[in-house]
Image (cartoon, rainbow, N blue to C red; front, top):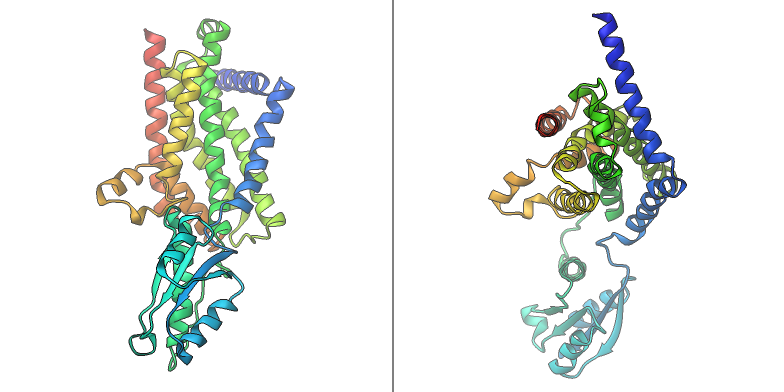
Length: 361
C-alpha cells in the first residue's frame, strides 16, 4: 500500500513539474504571468474609485435671501466643488449639463427662504458620478439646515471611506480568478493542439492524478500573484492588514482550489485553445460581475441574488474583506469558507467526471 501511494505521489509530482515547465519555459510567458497583474493592480488602485475629486456645477439662483447666500457660500467653498457658470435661466443651466461642462445644475427658486426647495439637476449619463455628486450636495444642504443637531459620520473598517480599499483588496482574488481560469482552461487544450494529449493518456497516471497535476500549477502561480498584490496593497497603498497572514494564505489557497475546477471543466469541454480562451474570459466576467465586488448584490433582484450566491467568487471576496479589513480569523468566517469549499468540491467533481468521460470515450 505504501509503495502504491509513493508511486502515485511521484506521478503527480512529475505532472506538476511538467505543467510548470510548460508554463514557465517561455520567457515572454513569464512576463505575461506577472506584469499585467501588477499593472492592473495600479490601475484599479488609482482609477477604480466612485469618489469624486472634482465636481463642476452651474448655478441659477432667483433668491437674494441670506439663507440662499449662506448655502451658496458653503457649496462654493467646498474643495470638491467648482462653479463654472452662473445662469440667468433654466435653458442655460440645462445647456451646461448637456454639453458636459457641468456635472450638477443647482436651481434655487425665488421663494427659497420660505419653502427651502432646491432643484438639483445631475448628468445621469454616468449614474455613479451623478449619485455621488448629488449625495455631496445633499450632505451640505442637510448640514446647513441642521441647526439643533450635528451629524458625525464614522466609517468602520475604512476610516477615509476610500473605494480603493474594497475594490483593490477584492481584486487580489478577482485578478487571480483570471489567471486560475485561463491557465487551467488552456492546459488540456494546449496538450490536444501540441499532440501530447494522447501520450499523456498512455502514461500509468490515473484520472485523479492527471487532474491534480494540472490543477496545482495554476493554483500555485495564482497564489503567488495574490501574495504580490497583497504586498502592494499593504506597503505601497498603505492599506494595513488587520487580520493575520496565515488566515489570508489559507483563504487564497482554498479560493484558488475552488476556482480551478471550473477551468479544468472548460478545458475538457473545449477542443481548441481559442475556444478555451473565449470561454475562460466569458466565465471570468460573469463570476466577477455577480460576486458583489463592483456592485452590491443587495441591489440585485431576489431571484438573481440566489444565482449570485452560487458563485464561489462571492464568498472569496467577502471573506478577504473580513480578514483584511476587519481583522477576523479563518475561524470567524466559516460561514463563508464552508460554502466556498462545497462549491469547490462540486466544480472539481464536475471536472473529474468530464475528464474521465472524455478519457473513456
